[in-house]
Image (cartoon, rainbow, N blue to C red; front, side):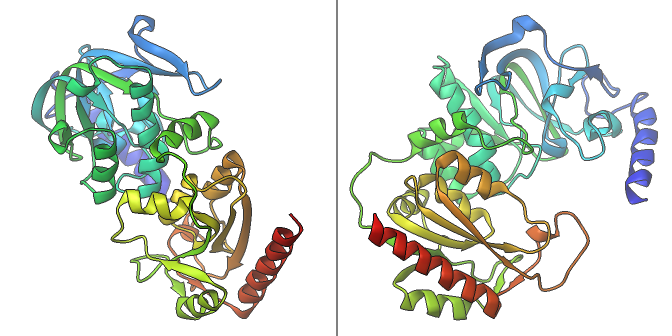
Length: 361
């Protein structure tokens, strides 16, 4: 019912925005264009057989509304680059009478559109970084001259990764939702949707971020969840005590630099963690590492199982009941989970079976 009301409201706003839209260079809401012209393809396809391209666009307006949008000089919005829960044609850049205030005019830029979840470590590593690395790998000749447009507040991990790529903070423009920026020469890479499996081409690119392989002492690691605002582990102290007795190193990712997290995970032979962004760093583990994800019994996402399959990990899950059950599809991402006796017994059995396999190798 709520979705239907929102859709109807957006359609009414669309009619109003077609008459006047403050902040848009043309003064009214853009029409639709599926994608840029063929000659605007800079290179591609990249990403195996996914038909993904990098585009070079001239004289465009970049909007920060809901994950970002690009409007061309003919006042057309490219549907290829946007996503919206209630349909692409109801995107705010098309429906709102106020598209935003122009905050800058830039000669050369790269727009890293993030339709799913800005300000999230998982999406930064899995969605944004690969597209930036694609541009670097394809030897975009003027990459260092371009401003990188993002539409979320800076995070320390983001700054760390950009520094690893030689990109300074003064080359990054942060676009707020109701802001726009005019760009004369824009490069944008196609977005790889979350509903697709974790692609091998992403692994090849992200592998470049790990330092040269050196022999590290093997460790069993537990990634501490701690007092997060959402999805904490009720009973974590009990689990930490048990794992410490089993020789696990307890690691708190918060406060660690990206380089420290990379080196920690590279030396892991077993990683145990509650479902959360910290598990993203398993991409730095060696093949055949045992990954154990503690996750909800209710509609758990498969983000990390998809990564594990691509990286050839041994992947196991232990299900935990949520503190309270909600019927929302994404509640597994928000609810705190309860450590039960059954889960502890399941973990102990997993570790015993793993130890036996190590002996027989």
